Figure 1 (tube, rainbow, N blue to C red):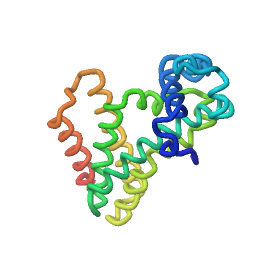
Figure 2 (tube, rainbow, N blue to C red):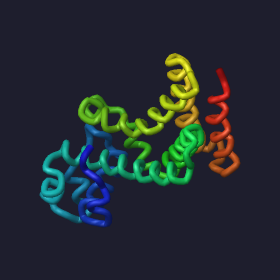
Figure 3 (cartoon, helix red, strand yellow):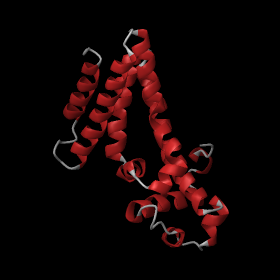
Amino acid sequence: MSVRRGNYKNSRREELILAGIKELNAHGVTGFSIRRAAEACGVSCAAPARHFGSRSGYLAAVIAYVSGEWQEEQTRILAAAGDSLRTQITELGVGYVQFLVEHPQFRSILMLRDEDLDRAYGADRAGLSTTARDKITCYCAAAGIAAEVRARKQYVIRALIYGAALLFENGELAYTPENLEIVRSSIEREFDLP
C-alpha cells in the first residue's frame, strides 16, 4: 500500500483515520459510517471525501495507517535484534504480541474478517506478516530445514503469537515481562525442535 502515515502525523487526516479505526471497531466494515467518523472529529461529511476520495479510499487509509505503525515497530525491533535471523524472528514474534496487546484498536483491524474487506485489502493486511515469514524462510533454508517443516514452524510460531495475545487480552495470562519471556522462549524453542 502506497499511503504512508508519516506524511500526515498529527493532522486532520490522522484524526479522521483514528476515528475510522474506532468506527470499524464499533460497527465493522458493513456498518462503517463516514458520517459518524466525520462527526466524531467535528467536521463535515465532505472532509473524509477530501482526504480519502471514497469509502474504499478511507478503508485503505486505515489499513495503511495500521500497517505503517507495525512497519515502524518492526524496523525498531530489527535494529535492536542484531544480525542473527533466529533472534530477529524471535524478537519480531514477541514484538508483535506486544503490539497486539498494547494497541487493541489496531488488533481488531488486523483480525477483522469481512468478505468485502478481505477481497479488497486482504493482500495488504497479509503483508503485515511478510517480514517475519521471509526471515523464517531464510533461516530454514540456511539451516537445511525442509519446506514442510518450515510450514509447520511458521504455523506454530503464528499460533504462539496470536494465542499469547488472546491470553493476555482476556486476562488468562498476566501481561508481565516474565510471561513475555515465556513467549520468547517458546518461539526460540520451536527452532530447536525437528
